[in-house]
Image (tube, rainbow, N blue to C red; front, side, top):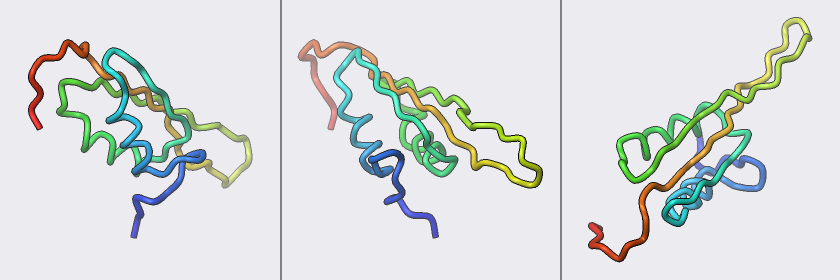
Length: 91
């Protein structure tokens, strides 16, 4: 069973999600070496939200070894749209 406790660099997937949710308005944060499971979970969580723009770039290192394939790795950029204008917020 896949776990949400997998690590990417020194962050776990839940840490990555929390980091994205705590990005200040109008700021961008990037993460590298996320796998396909993490990308799928991030898409499920943020794809339909209008206040975030998440982009995923395949960052897999290609090797020339026959019969060996590196697991896919992704570079993720998260941007929180808008400004902190003190308007109303829905919980």
